[in-house]
Length: 156
Image (cartoon, rainbow, N blue to C red; front, side, top):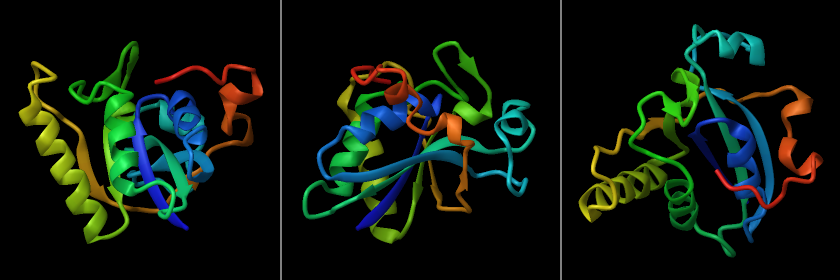
């Protein structure tokens, strides 16, 4: 198994999109990229901790590649919005790939370049590509939030 961590706005829809992806064996929502230890949702929502809302994806690379997961990430949010997604505004909603190793960094960087060159978006791709940091698991009520409410066909 391997791990990938993505931030693409509110983590509820992001998690659901990855959770239903073939080859993904587990998902967890949480916080990464900030300076506060063990942050709560309330802390992160102040926009003062520096954390992004993220989804940590555990996947079987024999079934789904990191490359494919990055495509799903870019296909399911707007990577041109700086520190926001739709109505959600703040650094916690930034577009970011947290890479586990040099291979993930290279793939994410190349995918970002390809997307920028594709002409799909009129604005610059602002997705950050950063080394993985401590993953702080979000409160239980956030885990599989949409699935628990029967909203499994939602996409980010």
